Length: 169
Image 1 (cartoon, rainbow, N blue to C red):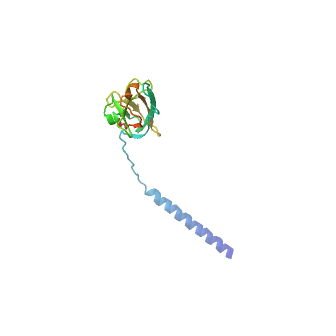
Image 2: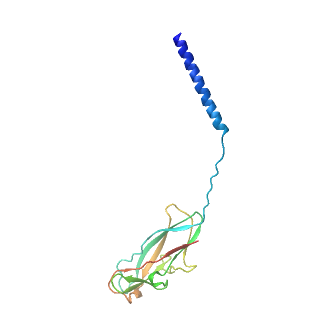
Image 3: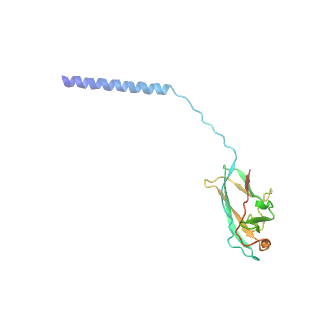
């Protein structure tokens, strides 16, 4: 008889647990609702990084070419234009690198293509137009040239300049 009591007790316990589980599930099903999730995305572009235009050793009476890049990111389908200012000279038509330890200057120019025919400026219509988004950002090449005639005020030294990158929508 003891085993019948144990079996009955087990059956009763199982029935109680099953009915409680069903009751709990029924309560959850009766209490549901919705949660609204929202967000807004504006058209935007951000400067990411750049690789310098490095000319290496420049010598008088010879053009010396260099190439760098500007990396930027925009929200998808956003159209933007990238402009480069005149650097420390403030003149996009007469860019100058300054000597690190002397008062010398070295003239150079930045261009929109490898043909080096159109100077890259901060004037509307002479920037580079780009559209879209990629996870790694969009990279634009910057083509530079130290012109043979740019050595008029160059003294043996290392020369640098900083050009401001502006991205407009």
